[in-house]
Length: 159
Image (tube, rainbow, N blue to C red):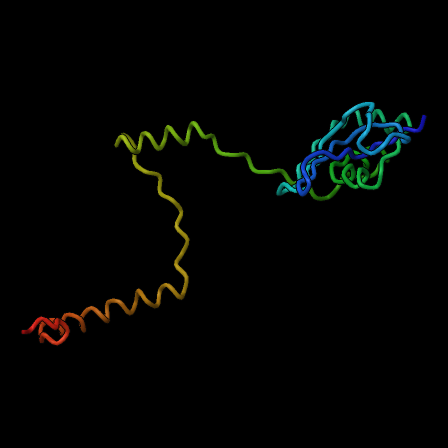
């Protein structure tokens, strides 16, 4: 039996999600698989790649042939280089940053709302050049407006 390591497509129409599977080469793409060894979600940023390295190494050692797409994925994780005896990839696999703990964020906001703690200072982006220009003109316009009020020209309430 010829065994392949290939992708099994799942997900919706424009949101492909794949499982990396071990399957007989004669079965259809989304057909029966011998074993599931990983995930590949290309639409996430960065792409989500999870591979059970131990099982992939086992299947490669007993003669399973990876498809081109799976070979590229295994090259990114370093499993292909490990099997071939090559040096590990130079750049590490990109991983999504951990989401902040929602409970801790909520409790901190509750403390601030209750007045028991100070609000954390948010990092403010420096103002752009265009937004600085109107701010600089505003003080210059204020004395002119005050002068019009004193003379009564701008009020229009003289009757």
